[in-house]
Amino acid sequence: MAELAIIGGTGLTTLKNLEIRKREVMRTPYGEPSGPLMHGELCGKDVVFIPRHGHGHTIPPHMVNYRANIWALRETGAHSVIAVAAVGGIREDMVPGRLAFPDQIIDYTWSRKNTYFEQGLNEVVHIDFTEPYSERVRRLLIGAARELGLEAAENGTYAATQGPRLETAAEIDRLERDGCSMVGMTGMPEAALARELGLCYATCAVIANRAAGRGDGAISMADIEANLAVGMEQVRRLLETAIPKLESAC
Ligand code: HPA
Image 1 (tube, rainbow, N blue to C red):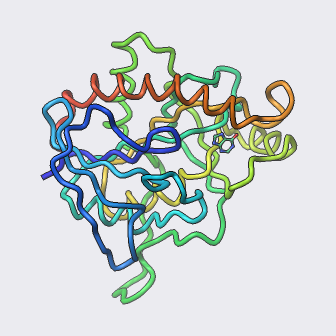
Image 2: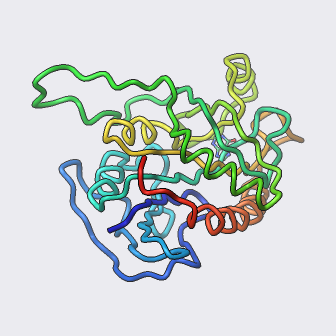
């Protein structure tokens, strides 16, 4: 039974060092996840992996079935989730190629299926979301980054935008005024759904580019891909260092 689930983001559709034992096609009450779940072993721990955007990276952020993905991961018995996600850097220290571990999130997405608590309820449910990320999983990631000497941002507010387009410079100005440090398109409702199901969830963000208006001119896909290649190599090393230290309890 998997203890840990890893959600792969853009640039991480496979986990090279995962020894795959089983591919599982799952159906959930909320539809199909982004693809078959990959069960295997990574550094001696049972791990389940799903690429958020599908194995061929064909599902855009606003079309991901977040409810099905999180439900399917919970069904495997995983108690912790590391969500890898590409972001644009707003704060000065959010330099392309670096990692960041957000500790807060603001949701700017709209019309996504964002809760399990909508039908057949005995009473209305409001989860506590004061601290949206698991501090235990965050500490695990921060500890691994320190051990490896990676220059990672240990906190920050993640702005979850709707996409799939990137933002305007004025939108990034507004996010900065709101206190956001990084911007991505997949952080919500994923984090909230994980909390609704009682999973310990944290994000390992990879800075793919400076956000709109924060770099030199237009943002190119070629630059994003090059920075993600650097960042994802760090993610692989980070996971290898962090996973053996994962504790079973939440
Ligand atoms: N904005 C939103 N999402 C992103 C970005 C960005 O600049 N870069 C990578 N994902």
